Image (spheres, rainbow, N blue to C red):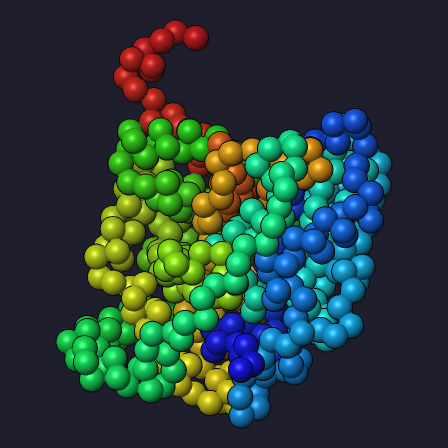
Length: 456
């Protein structure tokens, strides 16, 4: 039976088809030390290395049965009979001096172009010429194939946990058990057997619509029509600093991330001489709903929370407490479950009509920006014996959404990837500076009284 896309997978194709400015690929830049003997890997070695390990990810050798949605059925993943890894893995080099600016400009350029839907929907660039002999792998994968969690899981397959590559074998394929309660029939049976849960989910969907659709997100200059070219910037912080902030101030790592982003967006909007929305900047925060038994599988299993970032609040401690209270309230009212159910309801529309429902889920009326936070491995990873030092993550931009932030943790640090429309957000550096300042303010607030008494 054909491996058909789910309605959520197809949504990311439909968003691109509806507007040429929407780029629905995820990705990242992984920066490595020089090889143990110096230099960078050969392109042929990278291709051979990836092709051997793609046995565990057969989707990477598959293409869409049709490059467009909108028929009577969703497209399926089918084997690409002419698959050639050389079409997906290529080499490039940075111009001198190969520093931070050159790397970020290169990433922005690569991520400004869509993937070719006639082929498997992924690319890797072996990037040479970084300062100090470093090199990078810059990746781009369509969101129809992976979400944030599954893309991190895939990285585990392509990298090694030690400088000495181990003998690596593809894991056995998952059991071909039918999904429990799948499809329209499964949904109908579930509703009949669990009427109270169905009523609960219905109430959550109504609450979500009343809160976040009928009451629209505030109007900002970040939600005007955008172009197809991108800017990219990065920031990072020690994960232990973030954990200390949440220990001293309460809350979670995600609360620290959202509070820092609130301060960053406050600075950006002020730099644009813009009124700060009293109700907050509404942010879509993807939530992982992937069951443990599905770890390592591709495809999308996410829902969304809609968080109001208190950008009008000038006091950093007050901002943090407002973020904590908002996040705690959203957990309590089941908004993620309501969002998941709403996605399921739109899936009932036939493919030829689904595009209209899909666009409503990513409309600027519903949210102003996106912040995604994906936990990554907290041990060093290697490729060809070279240690990976940094990871710069990418989140897609939907139409009329000029800025997004992706966050990933790796080996004791949090990395923030800031993506923006090139023309409408020339001051993206203000967002990075605001993020760094907000994190510094929170670190200062988290200092104990004894530490504050120490004379430096």
